Length: 337
Image (tube, rainbow, N blue to C red):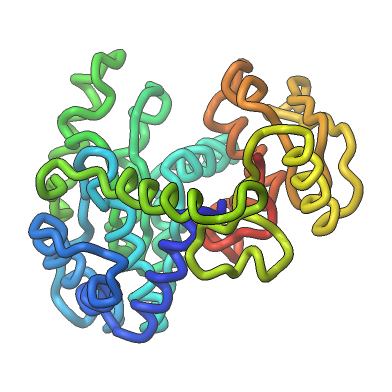
């Protein structure tokens, strides 16, 4: 949480709620200098605008059943999806935004309750007229076996589904077990149900995430050595906390600890139960009710899977399941550093 991603969200929310539609929101963001016009993104917005017309008019307007946006990292897939999401929310439509792994975790939990994938998808459609799924990736045969029926149930239930992925649909689950059984059927379902597949390649192979990070680095160089604010609006600093602490010395560690304790009380050792049985766990040396301070080695050097990271995010207040009142991208109450 925080940093360029959170700053981007604030710009998108303001642009979309005031403009009314993803294309209008995009134009507002480019006029403010936050986005740079990109022909490939504008082409994708044509499809998203049709989804917006359908969702914002209670399904009376004709439009695609969804859009599958794929392309390399930094091409703007998630930013465009969020433009659509905020535009539809601004129009009063019911929307749901999930990371793809959140959706699959929810689906498997429901299947343990003897719910079929099409029923689970239909339940999501009953709750939201727009379902946004970020970072679709298939690496597990258990996910590959149900994703087609799950998303088809969602679309047939009347919801528009927009998803982002680094891979083309036909490249999902590459070299996976029984891939030939699942992926052709998924691709066929997209075409049959009217989900538009659109490739997004940034102009000149630009990585907009790196471009935004470079801008943040320049602001950081101009800020104070410790406790600078790289958001550009000073909101975090005004709230009494910094976006970053540099260098990584004792003073930075003490500042981080003070920031966490000011928000959520004393930090202490907590063991986070993992898995259905809770027999596995992750030791968090410094944690309280709003977040935790953990090392890179603890996060990435331990035997953890997608469900474990989701549980950690929930512990830190960064994610909610499909039935939660808020979405992960909108909640910044806690954080993991």
